Image (cartoon, rainbow, N blue to C red; front, side):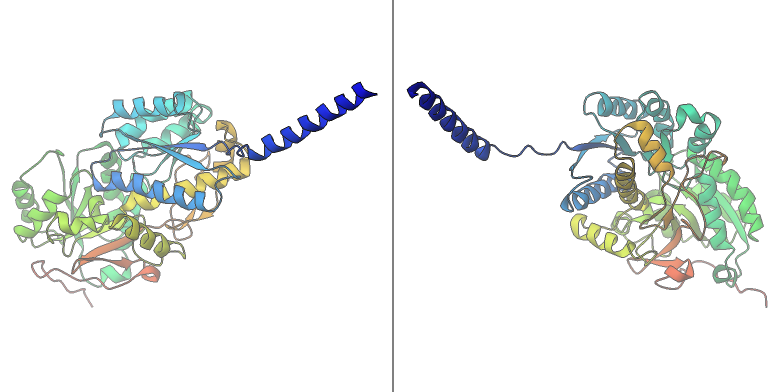
Length: 415
């Protein structure tokens, strides 16, 4: 009897000790979902990729994470080099165990990463690179390259966006009908220039010349002189790596031709200071801008400006949307496995800051590229006016009207 009582006493003490011990043990935190972000940090667009991803991750975590798990970012600067981008992707997957990678600003780096996303079965959502080869590779070998998605209008779509603006009633009433194409010599502009040559004439704009220049060009005087000899109404640009030097020299030399097209670095408010105001009057296509494109656009811009002191560059909008698209895909898939995420990403139908986002299917020549058009992502045209970026197209998102710089020749549309 005594022995039995002793055993019961020992059991009671053990149970009480266990209850106390368990009560003071911390609840194990949920395993984080690791996401990699790769970009070239030095240029403003590259830094905007990092900043937008950070803002989105903080917002997602503030709301409880993804399926109760916090997002943890791993950021890698590829220094604008494909080899560094590949090394970063390998490190992200092998060492940091990311479930997906977003970002990549340079097309050459994106193309170098596509085979690695395929080999490692890790989704890569490209938010800054525009080469049409990105989607073409997925289309040509879907089963291998299906892990790659392009959440950035490709070069063909960018040219269509520019041509749609130049062919709009808003622009046509100015009477500008001729253009000279001037692009930096990078992979993304090869298909861009080809598309310009196709879409501009269809929009009623005659192409009178075309030049591609080295990215390390310092003196644009000979180029502008060559352009002026053709007397175009517009210089249609394809600039991303360059931007400051040609913009400043256009302004200083008072080149009497409207500067339009794509000037990627001009898509963020920091460009005004970078050019000391020489960007006044410059037009540039952006995926989105400081305008009510969707109910989500301005809240994002305001939060970004408050946190980072400048407006996002074009790929900041893309990256912010990419983080939320990835969140929704993980929730739908109830998994972070590569193949399940690919299937979930393919079902994307998401209203983001740049429009409604969906990806092209297997039958498109640009498989897994973002869809373009008024029902999806159309892009915007913003112009620098008095130190601010003013959205002038499309009309439903416009925050101001087009103005012509004083030194640019004025024209009048035929009645």
